[in-house]
Image 1 (cartoon, protein in one colour):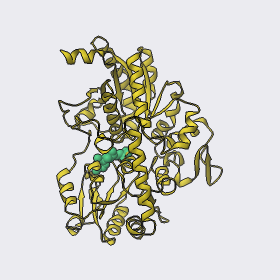
Image 2 (cartoon, helix red, strand yellow; image 1 turned 90 degrees about the vertical axis):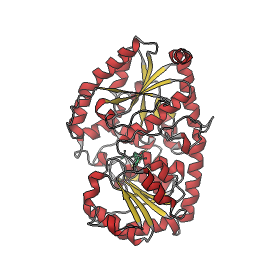
Image 3 (cartoon, rainbow, N blue to C red; image 1 turned 180 degrees about the vertical axis):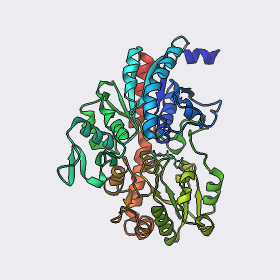
Image 4 (tube, protein in one colour; image 1 turned 45 degrees about the horizontal axis):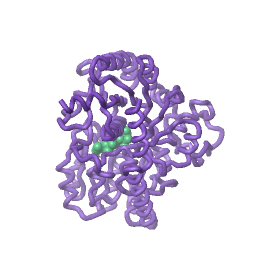
Amino acid sequence: MEEETKSSIQPHVLVFPFPIQGHINPMLQFSKRLASKGLKVTLVTTQSLSKLLPPQSESSLIQIRSIYDGLKEGEKLDHEGYLELFQRVVPISLANLIEEYKVTSHPVKFIVYDCLITWVLDLARTVGIDGAPFFTQSATVHSIHYHVYEGALKFPFKSSLISMPSIPLLKVDEMPSLIVNPGIYPSLNDLNINQSLNFHKASLLFFNTFDNLESQVLDWMRSQWPIKTIGPAIPSMYLDKRLENDNEYGLSFFKPETNACLQWLDARESSSVVYIAMGSLASLEAEEMEEIAKGVLNTKKHFLWVVRASEEGKLPPNFKEEISGKGLVVNWCPQLAVLAHRAIGCFVTHCGWNSTLEAISIGVPLVAMPQWVDQPTNAKYINDVWRNGVRLKVDEKGIVTRDELQGCILEVMEGERASEIRSNVAKWKKLAQEAMDEGGSSDRNIEEFAAKLKNM
Ligand code: UDP
C-alpha cells in the first residue's frame, strides 16, 4: 500500500534506447541513477530484443517494458532493413504505450530518448509530455556530426587537417569513419548526421560524458544549447557505490563467461594481463585476427581475448588449443568486472565510447585499435588529448601488424611512456569518480533534473 502511494506520486520517466548493446548499457545505468533520485523509471526495449535479455530481478530499481517493433520470430534483417522497419512500426507502439500509462496511477511525465531516434521529441509533445535526447557518443563526436549537418564541414575536406571549434585539428583518419566514407552505410550515416535535426528544440540534452573530460567542446556547446553531462554512465559499484540494492548491472545480448574469466584472472599476477575486446558489433578480417593472435603471443604476456561466436571462425586454426595456459579466448565476458580486476595490465580496445569511458573510470591503460564510426576520434583523444594510451598504426593495407601490436602493448605496459600513461590514467579515473560522486558535476545535473520533474 505504502509502495503504491509512493509510486503514484513519483514522476514517471520513460527511457528509450535504440536497441543496440552500446546504447542500452549507458541508458540503463542512467535510468538507475534517475530512479535513485526518486523518479519512477521504465526502460523501454523492443519485443525482438526482450527475448534475448535475461529476466529482470524483483528488486530492480527500474521497470523494463518491451514494445512491438515489427520483427517476426526468426526474421533476420540487415542494419538498413531493420532501421526502415523500426521507423515505420515503433512510433505507433511507443504512442500506444504512453496512452496505456495515461489511465494508470503513473502517467508518463517525460521521455529520455536515444539521440538516434529524433522523432520521439515530436511524438512526445503531440501527446502532451516533454522529452530530451540522450547522446551515447562523446560530445566531440556529436559536435562533429553537427558541423556536417550544418554544412560547415563537407567531404571531401578542403585540407588534410580539419579545423572545428574547440576540437584539436583532426586528420582524416581521426574523423568519424562514416563521414569520411558516406557511401558505405548511407542510412547509418544519415542517422548519425540527423541527430542534429531537432535537438535544438529540446529543453535539455543529456550527454554521457563528464565536464572535465571534454571541457572545451562542452563549453562551446553550452554557449548555445542546454547541455547536461550525466556520465560516465557505468554501474555505481565501479564509481561511487551509492546504489546499494542494485544487484543486476547489465542487460547483455550475449551470455558472459563470468566464472571462467574471473577465475583465470585470479590466478594471474597484478597488472600482468592484456585484455582484448572489440565490443558488440565490430567485425575484423581473418588476416587482422591472425596479426592480433601472433602479436599478443610475441609479447609473452598473458592475455584474455573476447572473440564473439560469430567471429570465432576467423581465428588461426587450433589457436585456442595452442595458447592453453598463456591465454584465454571467450565469446563474451563481464567487461566491467574484468577491467576492474587487479590482474589487468592494459586493454586493447576498438574504442567504442562505452569501452573508452569504462576504461577511463576504472583506470586501465589503453591500446587503441579503432574500427569504424566514432572510434577513430576516440582513439585520437586517447593518444593525444587524454594521453591514457597509444593508438596502433595501420600498414599500407589498412591492417595492424603483429609487430605494431606487440610494440604498443609493451610500450603501454612497461615502455618509456608507461609511467606517464599510468599517471594520466589515475588522474582521469579520479575525475570520472568525482563527477559522479554526490555533488559532482554529473550527479548535480541528474539531481537538478529529478528535482525539476518533481516540482512540475
Ligand atoms: N562488453 C561486455 N563484454 C564483452 C565486450 C563488451 O560486457 O565481452 C560491453 C562493454 O562493457 C560495453 C559494451 O559491451 O559496455 C560495448 O559498447 P561499446 O560502446 O564499447 O562498443 P560497441 O559494442 O557499441 O561497438
